[in-house]
Length: 129
Image (cartoon, rainbow, N blue to C red; front, side, top):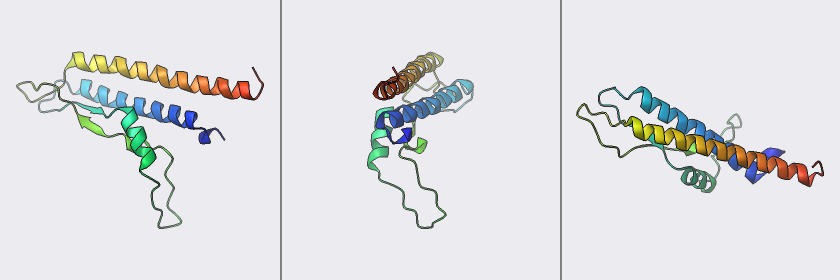
C-alpha cells in the first residue's frame, strides 16, 4: 500500500542512495594508503532518481523474470572524483572523505525526515492525529 506513494518511494530511494554512498566513502578511507587507488563517489541523488524515473521498465522476455522496482539502487553510478593524485597514484584525501561522510550523515537525516513527514501526513489524513 505505502510503496505506491511517491513521497515514500523517494524516501526509500534516498535512504538506499545514502547507504551506497556511505559504502563508497568507507571504501575510499579504507584504501587511503593503497598505491594506485582512485577515490570514487556516487553521482548526486537527484541525477540518479531522475534517470531511474525516465528509463522506463525493464523488458521481461520470460515469465520467470522478476520485474524491476520503480527505483533501483542500480540507478546510482560510481564516478571517480577529481581529487589530486599523490606520488604513489592514490587520489584519496582523508579530509575530503570526512567532508563527504558528514554530507552522507546530513542526507541520511534528510531522508528520515521525509519519511517521518510522510508518515505524519498519512496519520493525519486517516484522522489518527
